[in-house]
Amino acid sequence: MNKIDVLKEQIEKAKKIVISTHVSPDGDAIGSSLGLYHYLINIGKSVTVIVPNEFPTFLKWMPKTDEIFVYEGNEEEGKKITEAADLIFSLDYNEPHRTAMYSKTLEASNAYKVVIDHHIGEPTWQNLNLSVVGASSTCELIFDTIVALSSEEYINQDIAYSLYSGLLTDTGSFQFSATTPKVHIIAASLLSKGVQPDLVHNHILNSFSESRLKFFGFCINKKMKIVAEKKLAYIFLTKKELNSYSLGVGGTEGLVNEPMKISDIDISILFKQDKDKIKISFRSKKDIDISKFASAYFEGGGHKNASGGVSYLTIEETEKKLLLLINKI
Ligand SMILES: [Mn+2]
Image (cartoon, rainbow, N blue to C red; front, side):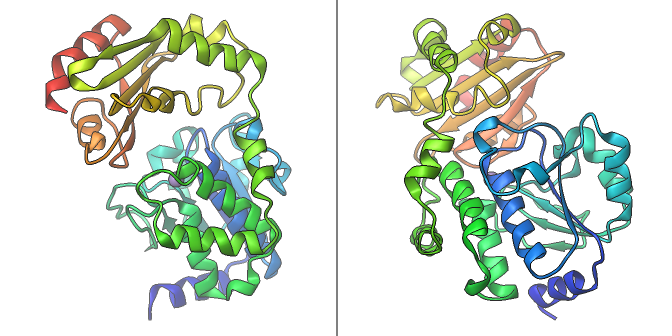
């Protein structure tokens, strides 16, 4: 049996389905989850989307975001829903630890587990893996999955808005190298289902508060450091600086991309001080595989040109470590 037939059988059998995403869900995580959610609801299934923690306000316009179950703060109910599920989708992540506070509950479940993701990784914990490493987005893969399970006719306007949002955010508005001809063909199909591109763009990208834009200005003006010979820009932000602007959930989203607008910058790194660690975002241009650097020295991973990582040192020590190691990039 091919993978799609296996999935089809599991969906038909399933009485309760859970769709889960990684911690701090982004546009692709929410878009792919809602896209699949609408499809499964439309074919008559009982489905809950569970996110580990809150997601940004600029994603809350998508159809049925109010139905998304936020695990953090509702753990008891979240455990019950997960225990009752006989089929669980893991979208936009491929290791349970990426779900942070939800991971124990997820791992305790006996449900049939399906991973659909595009990040680097070779997971072995699931029952079925429909991931394509290097694909533009999980939304692209959900489009393919729905078409393979049913047909393009099943993609209605709600699904189209959800999937288009993830395509847009994960390709940086169709600019990153994973923006293949196929991505544009999918985008065209979604537009033909009634998606208004300007509306999505305004909701997601032109939705800054005045305070958030001023914060971006502060980061570029006062905090950005350049290592010209390495074509590297980096920003360190203390907890205090992050708290002194009313940013809300997802307020630093996209900040790491700002230095990439400089023609002489090929690498951008953002360090954000958190409770007990420093969260790191890496971006690179062209053939520079920043995920290798992120995983070798900062417990990171992700994509060739976009990775995450973490440091348990102080800001001063982390900066020292970075400057010592930049020749390894
Ligand atoms: Mn993604």
